[in-house]
Amino acid sequence: MQTWIIYAVLAMLFAGITSVIAKLGLKNISGDLGVGVRTAFVLIFVWSNILIFGHTKFISSLSAKDVLFLGISGLTTALSWIFYYKAIKSGEVSVVAIIDKASVLITVLLSFLILKEEITLKTIISLVLILSGLILMLWK
Image (cartoon, rainbow, N blue to C red; front, side, top):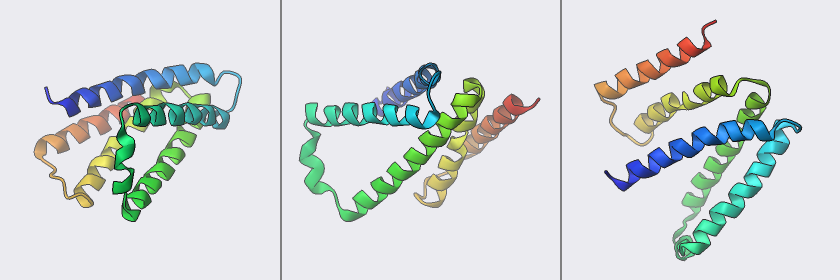
């Protein structure tokens, strides 16, 4: 199995755990404070990872364009987390998570339009199934 697939599976696993644990942590506080506390821990863990594994040597390789795109990505991440935490504070985590994970539809569309990645029939069928599952989960 390719390394990137293992990383993707681990990301999926931790993302799934994250939502339930976050809901437990939001019991007595606002979603905004919750995402702030979470972000502080993310900052510490990510920079520890960079320092421990010696990735600081790549800092000189960063271009202004790289920083711009990573900064925009950081902004969209922050907005996603803020709204996600507001949603799980008052909503059902299982439903909020399904809606959130439907972002894969936007990701695939943008990867096709911006990154010029290929969309195959298999991809289209998969997206239709994801959208169908989302609609089914939200159907009252």
